[in-house]
Figure 1 (cartoon, helix red, strand yellow):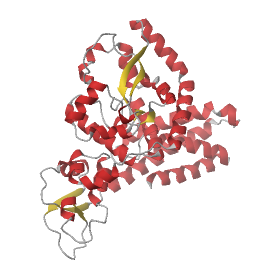
Figure 2 (cartoon, helix red, strand yellow; figure 1 turned 45 degrees about the vertical axis):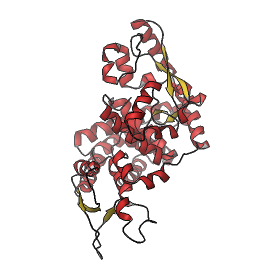
Figure 3 (cartoon, one colour; figure 1 turned 90 degrees about the vertical axis):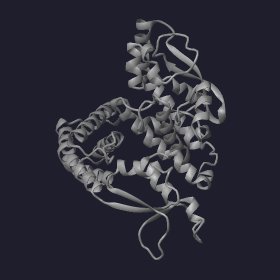
Length: 393
C-alpha cells in the first residue's frame, strides 16, 4: 500500500513539473524500482537517516540509468526536472514513508496458540522479539464460541471436528513474520509441510528469465570482469577463475566458476567463512563483499547447472556433513542452486552450525514459496545487498 501511494504521488508530481507523460513515466518507473530494491518499504527501515540514505542511493541509480537510455529514447534532459523530483523524493516522500511505517508498527495484534506442548516452539518468542506489537498466548484448550484469533497446532487440530480439512493458520503467519520456515515449525506440522514441499518442476518462464539475465549481465558487467581479472592477476597471479565441485538440483554435481578471492592453497576439508579469513586477498575481500566474485557463475546459469535465484550450492563433503546435522537440509535440492537467493538477501554470512541452520530455514521458505515474482524481488534486493555489503555466502 505504501509503495502504491509513493508511485501515484511521485507520478503526479513528475508529470506536473515536466508535462511530458512518457518522460515522467520512465523516470518514475526507474525511481520506484530502485526504491523498492533499496528496501525502503521494510517496516524496520523507519529511521530518517536510513530512509534518506537509501532513497538518495535509489535516486542516484535512477539518474544513471536515465542518462544511459537518453540516446535511445531521445528525450530532453533537464536538471530542473531532475532536481525537483529529487527534492520531492527526499523531503516529501521520505517523511510520509517513515510516518506510514511507524503507524503500522503501532498496530497491536494478539493471537492465541492452542498447543499441548510448547517446548519446541522457540519461534513464538522470536516473533514477539522481532515485532513487539505482536503477542502470542499459548493455551491448551479452544474455548467454544470465542471470536478471538486462534492458531492450532497440527496435533491439536485432531481433537476438533471439521478442522483437519482447513489449512493451518500458524505456518503461514510464522512464514510471513519471520520470512523463513523454522525447523521446529516443520516438525510441528509434518503433514502440512509434506504436501507443501512436493517436488517442483522448473518452469519455462524461470529458465527464460535466467537466460535473459545471464546474457545481459555478462555483457553489461564485462568491463567489471576485465578490471577484476587484472586486479587478481597483479596481486596474486594465476589462476584468475576459481573452479570447485558443488552439489546441484537432485544431488547432481557440477563445476562452479568464481573469481578467485583467496590465495591458491590446497585445503583438504571445507571450512566455514570465518575460518578462511587468513586466506582472503585484498582484492578478494572487496569483490566478495560486493558479490563481484559471483559474476562468472552466470556461465553456470547458461549451462543450466544453476539459476539466477536459488539456494547456494555447497561442496559435496560440506553438504554431506550438514545434511546429517540439520533436519530437512536436503529439501534445498528440490530447486536449482542460485547465484543469489532468499537467504543471501535476508541473512548474514554463516560462520557456525547454528547460523547455518537459520540460513537453511530461509532456503526452505524459498523452496516452498518461490516463484517468478519472488525471483524478481530477490534480484532487486540483491542490488541493495551489493551496495551495502551485507548478506550470506
